[in-house]
Amino acid sequence: MEVADGIYEFSGVSNFYIVLDKEIFVIDTGMPGNADKIIKYLEKELHHEPKDIKTIVITHHHFDHTGSLDKLKKITGAKVAINGEDAEYLTDEKSQAGSAFMVPLIKLLNFIYRIKPVKPDIILGEGDHVGDYQVIHTPGHTPGSICLYNPITKVIFTGDNLQYADGKIKGPGSRLIPEPEQYKKSIEKLGELDIEVILTGHGKPVTSDANKKLAEYIKNL
Ligand SMILES: [Zn+2]
Figure 1 (cartoon, rainbow, N blue to C red):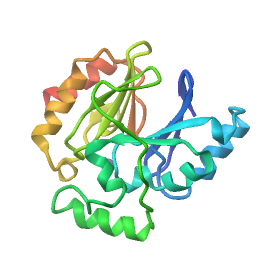
Figure 2 (figure 1 turned 120 degrees about the horizontal axis):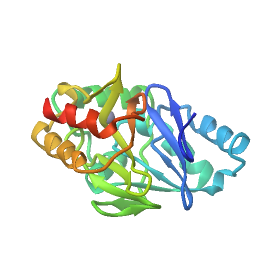
Figure 3 (figure 1 turned 45 degrees about the vertical axis):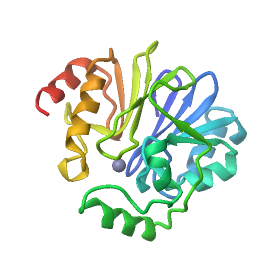
């Protein structure tokens, strides 16, 4: 569960995290039904209370990252933070963003999983901070996809921008990249950072040769 110092990963359909930083925050919430799991772990293993979670950061608006957001926000009273470009999808003001493939699929899954709209409290933009982490705006998979990078520990959370399996970094797949030009620029921006640990939205964490593995992925973009 502890994938890096003070970072606890939950993996299901997607990965989501509790981060013990200056204050406690959660990154993404997974599918519906995960709020209790997060709270139980927080109380039993980390000896904190629900109200100690001050912020829930959403890397992007997709249902497999926001499924337990409504419930977790209600239990903790935490502030919800997301990039402005994805905020309107979270509140349902805008229907959905994406390709002809993604839009009907996300609409259907939002309906099936009864994803409730949530009003964000904090709009995060490039250069903003959550604790020690810098916000990096990385559009492509969704317009408001963000990464969170800690320049001290060199840990980065990438949301769905990157996946890791079988020793290789991959992207979300071309059908899930409605804006490939933006995506490429976003990933190249990540390539300029000094990174030691990559914590992805799907798949395993990258804990060795992160810069090298990312450079290999970028070369083939
Ligand atoms: Zn996604």
